[in-house]
Amino acid sequence: MTGTSDDNRLAGKGRPLWTRRRLGIAALAAALTFGPLAAWAQTQIYDARTKKWVNYDKKKARQYFARNNQPPEAFRRQVVPFRTAEKPGTIIIDGNQHFLYLVQPGGQAIRYGIGVGREGFGWAGIVRVGRTAEWPTWTPPAEMVARDPNAAKWAAGMPGGPDNPLGARALYLYEGDQDTIYRIHGTVEPWTIGLDVSSGCIRMNNDDVIDLHSRIEIGAKVIVLMQGAALYKGV
Image (cartoon, rainbow, N blue to C red; front, side):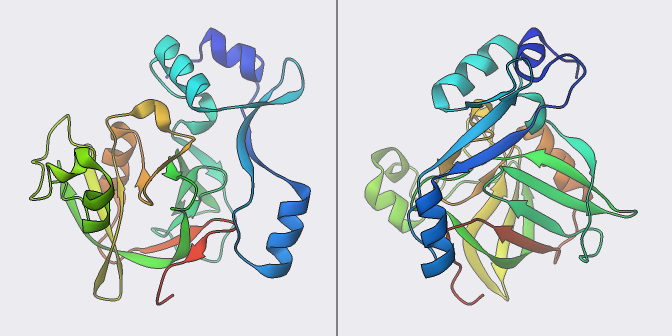
């Protein structure tokens, strides 16, 4: 996909678009000292024209996607240098930066932009891909049914399709033989890539999750990293 005027404005023509996670200094120090806590954080995108970091929130994300029909360059699928001891085929998720890496041979990875759990729904741990599905059925967990009237009407399951919240593909994450209830899946809200919006699942653009699904093997290791998040039980 080609760049847009917004990319040039945000990143500078021919320059990479970077993102970062801004964390309050006091909150960061407390997190390092005392462990997980609710720390203030804000997704930001670097504007090379002004040489400043600018906030990237839900409103700006919607506006950007409405103009360009795609997320900012940093959140688009691309091959990047990546040093890790994990073997090719491993998925490493950097929840704070909103990136999913699929490890490749030769010190590289395919990097995808993602949306992650909103405050109180983030998590971290080591799991595996237990199964996958194309155009999956969405069955909201009991906790979501209890708190969300929109989910309650689909308590018995919503058939797969273009309006299904799981999008085009789903990778079901297991801890051992137990379904964690977390998934890596597509979305009907592509403007939310790069934001903290979900109930704990990892969401991707449909084109990206189709690509990831075509490359992944059942049993693949998935490492989820997120500063200040609770560890998944059993990890």
